Each structure stands twice: as structure tokens, then as C-alpha cells.
Image 1 (tube, rainbow, N blue to C red):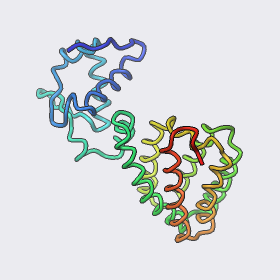
Image 2: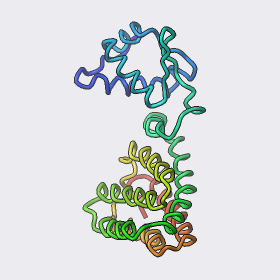
Image 3: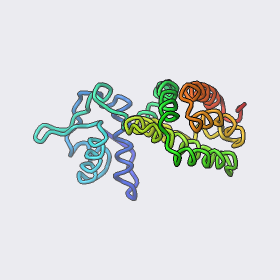
Length: 234
């Protein structure tokens, strides 16, 4: 096996990325064993120590499993994996996973908003109002996008259910892995704030039904904007 040498200054990080990509693009499919460590390390032109570190990190992420005396095998990650894999899948495999994330974002996001409206604390409502103002006054698309992400994290926590919060975080973590491709949706922070306003107003008013409807509308509208070409926001 031949490979392009990996820069030595970030060898483990680069090796994790390279090996992850080889797994997720099917070079090493689920159930397959990786080549012996000596052969794999030689192919990537790294030390076996660096390879071991990379394998440990990918095992922790749920992509690989190592059995002493047997070897390292690719897990059946679609059957056994969890939301922690989403950032890897989105950044490597791409659009197909992003479409599915958008679908879950719409469906789960509406339920999360309704729960947040029913359970948000006064402090969380104040935080949402403050973030709404920051979104409107954001200095550019990047700052607006990050502020919008924080709004969703606060709404997730406001449900009072930590599992909902973790689900929101998982979706946002996947989104953050490719967020540069969606900054065009935030080119006009004031317009982004206007789109978000009905959702924040409903959550802060404690109106669960209105928050559910506002979230569904918000996610549908922003998805349509995000999947257009950059610069074609509406």
C-alpha cells in the first residue's frame, strides 16, 4: 500500500483524519479487519506508536474496535454507532448525511422548542432575549452563525431534559464540522434575527404550541436558504 507522507507536526491528527476517511469511504468496510499494524504504519509512513494513538481515538469515537491478539476491526457503525459519529460522517461522506440531519433538525427541533417553552427558567428566557439582540447586532456572518448555534443550545437546555440537550448538541456538532458551507445564510444578521424572532418570542412567552409551529417554520425556511448557492439568500 502506498500513501502520501503525512506532515510530522500533526502526525496523529492527520492520521486520524486519513484513517477515518478510509473507513467511511469504504476502503475498510464494516466488519473488515485493518492490515497488521506494521504494514499499516508503513503504508501511511508513520510510526507504530502514532498509529496506535490514532486507532485508540477512532475506537473511542466508535469506528474501530481492537481485540488483543486478534486485531483491529471496523465496527458496524451504522447499526451500533451513536450521534458522536455525525461530525465525522458529515465531514467525510457529505451531502447525504446532511440531508438526513436537516430532516431530524426539523422534527426534533420543533419538539425541543415546545418543551423549552413549557420549561424554560426566567434566566434562560433572559439569555435567549440577550442572544436575539446579539444576533441582530452581530458583526458579520460568522458571528451571527455562532450566535444562532448558541440560541439552539440554550433552547435545548431549556427543555429541562438533558437528553434533548445532548441531541441538540449532537446535531450542532455535526453542523459545526461543515458550517463554513452555510455562512451565506447569515450574511444579513438582521434578517437572520427576524427569522429567529417568532421562535424566541414563543419560547419566552411559554406558549408550547406556538413555539412548535414557529420552530417548524424556522427550520424549514433556514434549510431552504442554507441549501441554496452562497450569496442567494432571501
